[in-house]
Image (tube, rainbow, N blue to C red; front, side, top):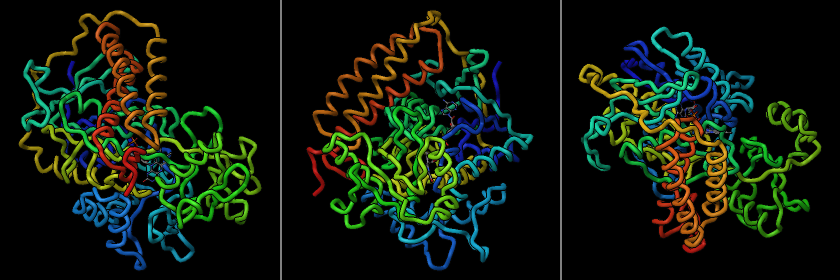
Length: 520
Ligand SMILES: Cc1cc2nc3c(=O)[nH]c(=O)nc-3n(C[C@H](O)[C@H](O)[C@H](O)COP(=O)(O)OP(=O)(O)OC[C@H]3O[C@@H](n4cnc5c(N)ncnc54)[C@H](O)[C@@H]3O)c2cc1C
């Protein structure tokens, strides 16, 4: 049986949930998500959301900071649009119930993060994402036009390809009719048809071994769109957060927010010496990519697995007040951060690239939108400014909602779509074939396509990944469908896109740093 709706939303982070709420009074929304409604990158965001909300700041300053961070390849029109739209979309979040910390005088208690020239980060203590997700999920659950399907995994987008027609990348005539989705409780693949399909599937962190992203971040949406012959770009620009808590193999890595360096935290090598001064005049407040490379270099030089972030010189009560979640997390591990330094190491955090979209969030495929981290809007360029990603998610949810509503009457639902073809896929594989390849992909990406790259490392990664690709495609064709097999396939696709684009770059820029093309 087909599921039919006006709007099919895949993903329940800040982007998918806000979009669903914006369109719900105009038609039926089906919201599918592969885990629980809350599980998402959004849920783990700590620092907050950037917006100009006071007179000391200005749109021009926020634009300039974003452009500078983006290293020359941001789309300036998009940056201006997002920055100007920010206050209205923050107000929308507040209207939906999100709360941001305020000072005694009633104004927002704004934080400052690396790369920002002003205090402009709205936050809720150090659990800003969880607060946004709490408010949005509550509003979505209360809306009668939104059908929520948790534990449903989108496998592939439906286009003319499924009607036996040829589709080609960069051709403008590809049309999206919905998606094939496996209900993980029944293991049945269902056909979801819709006038508009919105990919809001978030990031790709799990393509690397160490990441701050939860296990759901496997780049599914980007891989699906690429398979459907949509255009994907800027994938070489992967952001590594410099300060994830180092406690061996914990996954995901717990983030120590950048706001802690903004608060006065100092990075030190294991012998206690200040780390950043010899790398950048801004010291520990240098931008993320600079700090991540410096830490990576010191760790490699010294053979250390981690460095320290030190806030012991700050007031204990202020630490507990501003960073209650981090304080409690560290206490649970026996580290009192008011007296002891925090062991940290870089971890994969964010992808600047993704599904190419226009200023309304529309992809290169008709009736297919991409919003949030899965998309490439032109806002981040080669490097993301801290706290601009939640902002991008809510602004583009708004833009995509406006565009889909504008066109809604002109779109009809195509019903002649074949059911999912199970033929030849009845053989349950040993899990080890999947899990071992999953680990190998992560190792290849971490060792050869990490913070510092070279032609040789990229070529080696490309060849190794090619072998795993062939094995996995053969496995996919003959095996019964499982979530882990689909995710493995998607991660290989993401790895391929990152490597291919990195190999094509003949320069170091933003987050892509190659020793063969050092910065001029
Ligand atoms: C630890 C951490 C801290 C961060 N801190 C900040 C911060 O302070 N400020 C900031 O601006 N940004 C921050 N970021 C980045 C920011 O959180 C994300 O970029 C943003 O939340 C992305 O929102 P989204 O809605 O696009 O995706 P997500 O919030 O990741 O949501 C994606 C959704 O898609 C679902 N999904 C994925 N694949 C499928 C599939 N195949 N089928 C069905 N459902 C699927 C997932 O389950 C999830 O519900 C942080 C990220 C992390 C990990």
